[in-house]
Length: 340
Ligand code: KG4
Ligand code: ZN
Image 1 (cartoon, protein in one colour):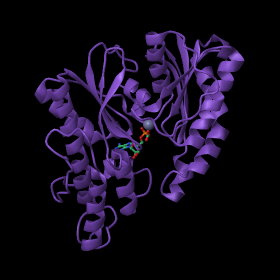
Image 2 (cartoon, helix red, strand yellow):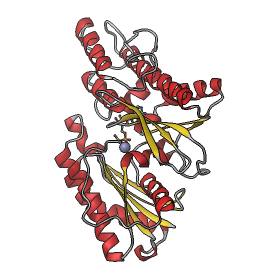
Image 3 (cartoon, protein in one colour):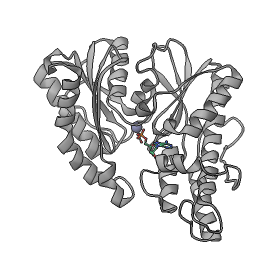
Image 4 (tube, protein in one colour):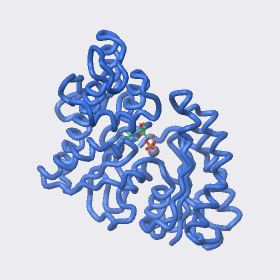
């Protein structure tokens, strides 16, 4: 079963061909980072325009790298949401046009379901119940996932997503965009215990998250103790310690709540996915804690943590396996939000 997966929900235009939900035949991602960097974040209107320019070349490259003609595909999959509507519409229009032109089924999936499937790309299929943390720029949520890859929401964030907190803190410290990768690198040189920042646990058994208070705490710290020095520069505090302390507070909460969810759901497996799952400290701490508890931890390779087309094709394969070729109607619309 050969599925072309198309992804355009934020600032990456991506397409991939995946066989049977796991074997990746090609995986092309055109990043818009350089275009948005001068603005310190994603500008939705610019993102849409860049997707329009990139979508067809990216799809053509994905087919060429897989060594396939479009007619050999069995289905076309696309992320329908959540995300920026103008950006989603570009991928959705391309997917609809291809499905219609080729006379192949269109399978529209949730971007978040895609992230969950990234944990099993190139690996054995999942056949147990598990808890999955999705931590990305737009979402931070815990799911219980059944052996057929259907997910049930356990808890989500009340305000900022974890990745959003990384991006906003990097911006307020003058570190630029995208914040997650920059903080990940800089935090390695800092002491995570030098500056303790608040961790919002929101009650003993809560599976909800909140990161806006942490972001404000970092802003207040910098306001109080003076402007942040540059990396390695002298100043009233070390920038490296601030980012390490911030990162540790985020990681502590993510690890703690994921383990709590595993306990509540009585599962033996946990997965951590989404852009923030690329974070080295988070991967290390999740690994340690899962090991201590005898849990099996599933982490996507770092390149499949951030947005890509392969995860969309993989999620579509699960949909197809569950319900056969239910052709999604060609008039379906982009969804900025996805409730569950
Ligand atoms: O999943 P993703 O590519 O897009 C969304 O669905 O939002 O996630 C992007 C987010 C950004 O907020 C980015 O700063 C964060 O993931 N991110 C990281 C790292 N790499 C990407 N956060 C922390 N550490 C990283 N290494
Ligand atoms: Zn994403």
